[in-house]
Image (cartoon, rainbow, N blue to C red; front, top):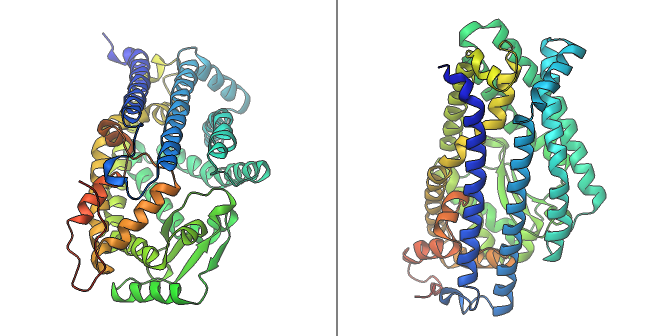
Length: 430
């Protein structure tokens, strides 16, 4: 029996299994949150008031309900694409209308991706203008929201469409080992984008201004100097243009590296807390977390292209989904649609690695600023302002959280001794 003809039923089973697992995890987390909803967890009784905690519970439950709807919606979309023959029909129409040239096939792949992106817009709109607005987070306008999507589409077309065409060309030119060249090309493209994006792309969406002269800027630059962190400057991004959520990040490489702080973050935290947050981010740099994650991403990409090449060599695989046995574009499409059904199950291992990095960055940050008190204070404020879930189910956080929970981070930070003369460590509860 040709096992390739089992590809469609196996794929459908994987899609359904992923959806059921996601729904079960949401249900598990909802029950766990509700079980702790009557009172503020003991570890936070002195820092988070009852009304704020109640709002965080409501926000968590509302987001969970929307996630469940999204999972079912995605399931229906995937089943309609794969089980009804819609995809192979659309492929035949594309081939009949535009032929099988590299540019035509890349255009077909891009168009399918665009249609899927458009199909997700209604739920994204609801999340922004209903859910986020109900809890006071949304600050964007419908015009800005729509303009962001148009810009994103134009960038995807300008960058993604030629890249798809190039990868298909490499496959037709390089023979059986095309996947190695495709991997090298995509990796190079990603590296170039990491340099170019902060300069040319991010400013299309947000305004970046230098952090004004003053005690905060002097404090952060002094931190960078004593931790041997080279940065071209510290900038403030107008994150409040779209949301009241806060964040901080690095952009660029080497002497072009810049520190970016959301204006909401600057507004929420004290100077010593902002210093601790930056020290945490510098910890990622000093512990070489960024190159480690890049290496992991590159290895994963290499494995993905290898699997794609194997699938493309199996005519029965594409025929199982209704596609003709020849042509690489259908293999690209199927791999893109189905890859998440496999990588989903690896999420706990990847997140476990990521959380380990966060603990290391926390420890570095605490030592860099003379103790854990400022970072603990910053984490508590950000948790409160963002209405983060204080009581996620462990299995849920294992699948979805790239960062440890607040209580886990506090417990780890509380174990770090403060040097003599530093402020008293904040209490983290029993």
